[in-house]
Length: 98
Image 1 (tube, rainbow, N blue to C red):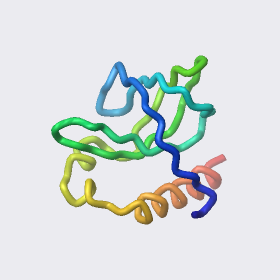
Image 2: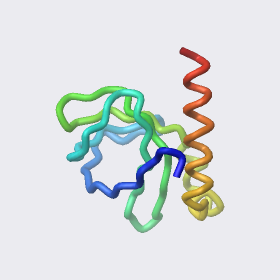
Image 3: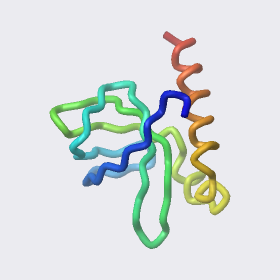
Image 4: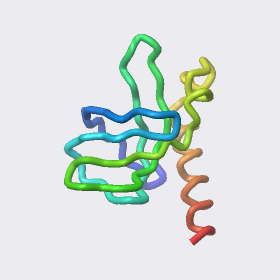
């Protein structure tokens, strides 16, 4: 699966904004790691984020999918394969910018 291993980890989000959020989750991530964030609310949303900071199990995430785009029904219906493709393309883009 393109080196991506899907793992569900419950977490608690705080400090939510249009550009990102703080997240407390028991997972071993480092700055630069990508993750799929899923909000289990009445308006169920998924978006891709990148870890920007870490302090223990408290992470600063930047959203790669703008909130206004993530709220659209067609984005919510994206398959995992489409999201995997997005993440792979983003990794290539990040590698070129370093």
